[in-house]
Structure formats: structure tokens, C-alpha cells
Amino acid sequence: KKDIPAANFIIHEIHCSRNIEVCRYCSESIPKSEMKNHIESEHVQVTCKCRMKMENSLLKDHEASACPLRPALCQYCDIQLTFNKLQEHELYCGARTELCAGCARNIMLKDLKEHPWVCG
Picture 1: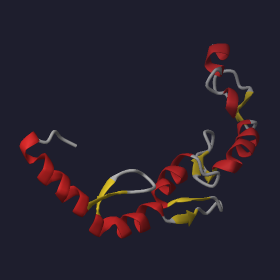
Picture 2: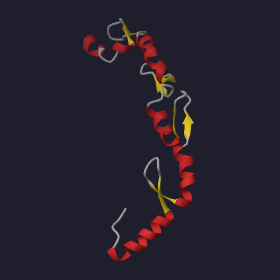
Picture 3: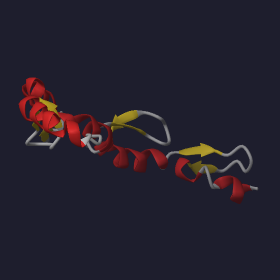
Picture 4: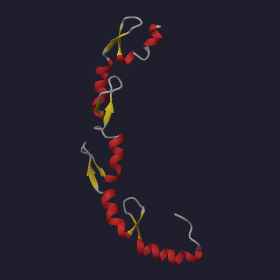
């Protein structure tokens, strides 16, 4: 949006009223010739693989940050699972042990980061 000189304002206003429409869903100014395509591509209802319904324009953000079925990596073994199964897996996976080369004790994976301070 930019300033319109007063001398051109009436012509501009006539042009806009003939050619531009405000989308009833997102309030964006869209050329009338593209409005049908805009609504079909941005505002049509779609269903995510998690069965949640939303506008098509929101699907990518949902799949990346909110979908319970989005891919997630275990911090202990780097296996990829769905986000809704990650916490349960990490509770199990973090409780596995590895032998410490320094003190020869079995240390749980979830404690390996802090262990060097205890082990010395």
C-alpha cells in the first residue's frame, strides 16, 4: 500500500473498485480475476494426517510445529518417530545404560551429559 497523489485518487478508486476485491476470509486485497483461485488455494478446508481440519494456508505450519504426527528425533538414539510417541520412547531410551570409560560404571543415557562432572 502506498500514498496516492490527490489528483490521481478518483481514477485510482475507480480502478480498484472495478478490479480489486477484499477477501472475506483474510482481508487481503486480491484482483477480482484471481479471487476464486485465491480462495481455493488458500482457504479451502483440508484434513491433516492427524484428522484435524484447517485452511490449506495453515497446513504447512501445523505439520511443522503442532501436528502430533509430525516427525521427531529421539535425543538419545536419533531414531525418528512421531511427536506423540517421543516422550514415552525417550523415557525408555534414556534409561538405557552405557559403560563409562573413566569410572567403569554403567551410566544411564539421560545422565551422560552431567556424568563427566561427577566422574572426574
